[in-house]
Image (cartoon, rainbow, N blue to C red; front, side, top):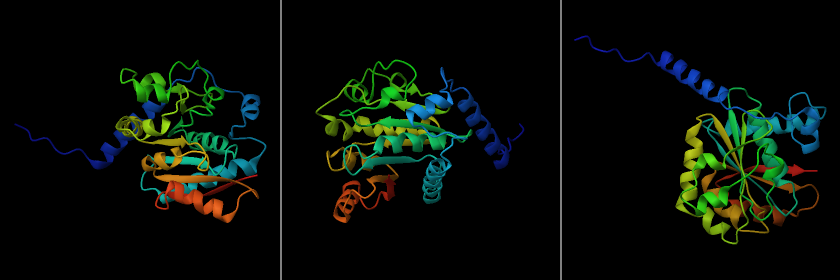
Length: 245
């Protein structure tokens, strides 16, 4: 009987890369936003006039990847205060990673008190994160929606809940993060958390992330505010400040 030779590592790697690219190609997007719609929704894209903004997000992407040992990264984005630009930053960070044709991104709206997911999805939302965490019969695929950006998917927060902190601290949330990380090996995941000053959710959600970023309204926060924000997400997860003008 002929002994099977182990597969050449280079061949194995090439096959794996081909499969990943085929998976990405299979991610059909029903509607792609036009440049006018991207401007209206304040979403970055290649070729936009505001090159400084695009390059700023690219710089954040570079720094995160430099600090990571893998492309399969979970980043948490929270602002110091309500209305501080956390959602704008979180979605655009996800969009920046989706610019790479060989990678995918997933934006997870973890703010049931002030959800923004509807402006980023192109199909009607029937269920979201809170429904998934409450109801074990809701499959994961039913809460992942296409955005108008190629290779970028959205998990909406779902209905508002006074028990969001408890849901986020559950085993089901832990399993969810693990599953969305493994579905695509080169997926970048952004958790859009409520502000650190208004709620405790950012502190709870930080346990699932590899990197935590704080959005700081430029000229409107004190040093003590910033230090308190860093403590809220944990110094071991904290990866930097993003100043929002």
